[in-house]
Image (cartoon, rainbow over all chains, first blue to last red):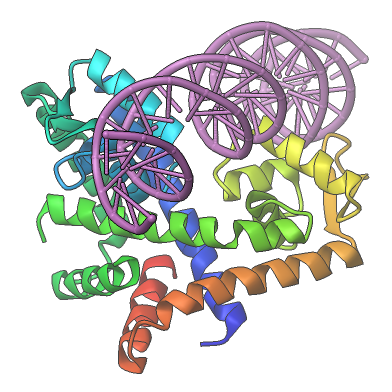
Length: 136
Length: 136
DNA sequence: TTGAACTGGTTTAGTGTTGAACTATCGGGA
DNA sequence: TCCCGATAGTTCAACACTAAACCAGTTCAA
């Protein structure tokens, strides 16, 4: 694969993602949530500390502070000091937060699926495996 | 593939792209350019009008106004009124703009390729095939 | 123990982005 | 010809984002 081909693929891929975000923004907004906030919620189980979350989602720490604050105020997230390390704030989804997160991810998945419908189930699994290697 | 898996797939893809952007930001910056400005340059040939560009790159028109203004001021872009429709501003890369664009896209491609390098030759071929189906 | 270096998280101040409203032009129908 | 609705692009005020600096708590070597 030549360099210019890789750049082209990358660019198309980027456009695909931007377009999916734009498509679901309105529906996700109806849940009282922004798309980026939805991403935060979706990773809380796996990365329950703000600094971890920020690294996983590739965003600066102050931005995460802001999102966590908003999500907590909205009652979607709980936050408590970690007794083992008083610097850390352990995060957890509230029941409402989990519900909204699942609905939002379904919206996102639907929009994405509409575009990747060209791939068979097997191919989708394949793609997932490859992306996991790339992001690991 | 369940919906939640599709969401996971989307999330992985998104993280990959964000991470590549973060990686090249400094090098592209050395060219006197932001990554998003680079994207604008890369699409000018194909979409020579601001409104078209904004749609193609999925960004609002005022943002495009700003980028075009900056890129023109930097001497990377030329802008002239379209004689056939006085509302339109036809855009074209200057020689300097084309050079910078090509260098920037190479940086982007290299960063992408560095990650693709984790995959075996067979896996790379697989990935390429899948992405081509997705974006083709 | 102490304190220097590090990590988690927040605040602030400045920059970047964008929705809403605007101007100018176009295109088509009466 | 004269509207009227639509489109290209811009302006501006409001909002979102983040770099830099900061505080608090932890770790570990001396």
